[in-house]
Image 1 (spheres, rainbow, N blue to C red):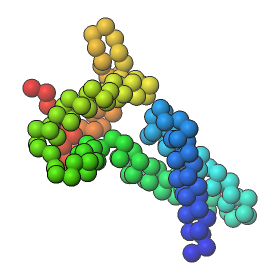
Image 2 (cartoon, one colour):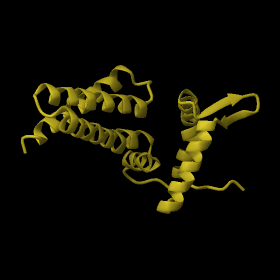
Image 3 (spheres, one colour):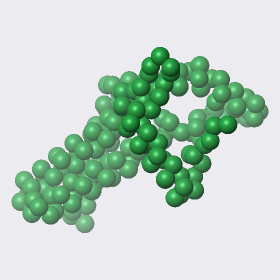
Length: 169
């Protein structure tokens, strides 16, 4: 139990630091900000374990990795999902309409308002910064890294039977 408290404290520090970072730099790409802070948190925790005199080769790596994975899981599961999920946007829209919304209104929310709100432009900008897409005279296209990621999504969707694999017709 004594080993869990420092890990929990490190994850709590990550959450507070991540929230502060997002407030200070809301225009940054949330996923990459969280990934960076998760890694830094894991490394700092490893340093704490080593400084406390525990075995640096085993306990420090294990605990640091655990902090990284817990921080990453939190960041990806809660803030990133709330920021990106269509389902969350649907629930929020319905939450602001006590009498409910017609299906057509919800479809407009996604088809029109989502685009007008800059969602497509935001994603193209983020994926360009990430090196996944590039913009040229003929439009937006995948980079070699983007093609690799696309293929990995197809494999993941086939393995886990998800709806991410869409054919254009």
